[in-house]
Amino acid sequence: MTAIHRNVQRVIESGAALGVDVAPRNFPEGAKTAQDAADAIGCDVGQIVKSLIFGVDGEMVLAYVSGSNQLDEAKLAAAAGGERCERVDANAVREATGFPIGGVPPFGHTTSLRVYIDPDLLQHDEVWAAAGTWHDVFPMHPATLVAASGGTVVELRRA
Image (cartoon, rainbow, N blue to C red; front, side, top):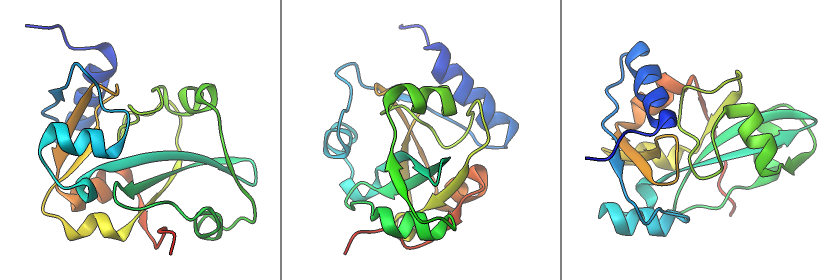
């Protein structure tokens, strides 16, 4: 049996503190795209929670977007009450969350970020989020995603 990565352990512990049972599944090949993750898990790509970090007027914010959607950066900026939305690099993501790109989970971050959630994720009975690495994911109910992340559900999808 493979040892649990320290990031995954942190997600499990953070989940437990929030009353969320995190049952991670490891995919050694990893999942660099939402479609890769859906194929590995055997679910619809829309059930994959993409964790996207952006700077809105200099403030780091987090968007959870359905794997079948593309983020509209103008909608995210408006939701955050800002004007300008910019991509950030991998170092900024790790600094803000404590996790690498592709492994950012819904909770357990090293800093507090405002969170915005794509309503399309709420159409599913189960969604799959990163569990601290791009090799590890876990399932949860969408309502749990909203509650545990403290997120605001708002339209984020590019038309």
